[in-house]
Length: 522
Image (cartoon, rainbow, N blue to C red; front, side, top):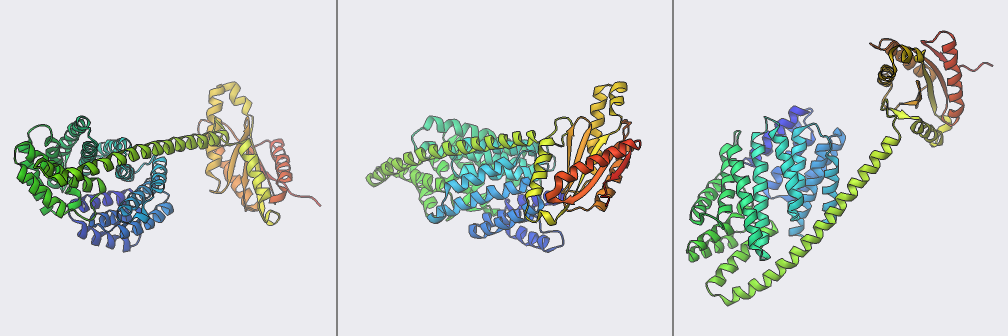
């Protein structure tokens, strides 16, 4: 599975470096091959569809990806699917109002974030983090997006096979701060906007320096384009304008999506205006307005039109001045709406943290702190649940009572820490012999119990014999166990436990290290 993720990472880099069509054909062949129907490969298809601007197709593939991830049980790819679904739905909502549902997007994003605790696959973890970050950025929640991009970078930096990805996440951070600056300009906070362009330049330059892999030039030039945009309103506007023009042309010729490059036009126009080339700046923005990609995000569309209006106003257009006043009032309202969404998202994240803490506390209350297996409370509840299930009278369940032989001698001769180590080793040995659906619990002291659903006495006794041998063979733990086994209908488990206990004492009376099955005598 890890190698498949690595292959998916390489395909993702190629797809975002201008090879979307070739990647789609290649991943189609992989998915049709035996064992190729994997969540990571469906994710490649999703990204290709997004790059191609086919959001409807991307959304359909996301659902397929989510089903595959749930089959595989990979929390990272599940989180990736949830965050991508949020992103695609939001982008569709910008085109079709009926699809726009901020609450649903926030639920998907916070659920995705909650999934990411200890995902071992770095490719899954990185792409999930980036998916969450891009989703938050789509909602203009830059404060929540930034930490996710930074986490993705840290994971990639620790993984020598993700050179290109590492540069991409730094580029994402640079682009995010440029977008943040564009929005701050629209609400009249130029000082804060310039702070963000300065931060953007730092991330962009780092991305250019750290770019690597087969598509090094594309990644480096994309990062340098951002660095040039960041200089447009601060230092070297003349150099920034020339660099933006050159790098934009190079990336366009490489096949980079026009929507991914559209943010650069306002910065180039600002640079041109600052060096006294107002007419040329207006020409740049007129062309940018006329050629705005249909899939450009709302913020870029708004910034493009506003920059054009600002330039026209500078040339004396009364119509532009009136339109600009209206646009600024709309921008202010949208900024207030952003602040409200940020509050909602923060509240949802807090609720998720509380929910996770509650679940953790609940699990802890059911676990024995010494051995990490279920405790008596959890065992008793499992017994009651089995007794109350529909059809319990017709279902056979086996129970075991397991007691460690002469455990007091281990504590007396080796000390209590050694006794604790021995109990932990016994718990691991017993658990290893059980089936997935079985439950082992520590009842207290050196006594354990096991519940085996849908198991008759022959199955129970065979497992008990394997347990006996496993404990006997433990290194550095001179312990044996006595095991009593009893089977009964599920609704008679209380009586079965009493019988298993009696059988266990029969085993101990015979000298221990033995299994005894309770048999009714008629």
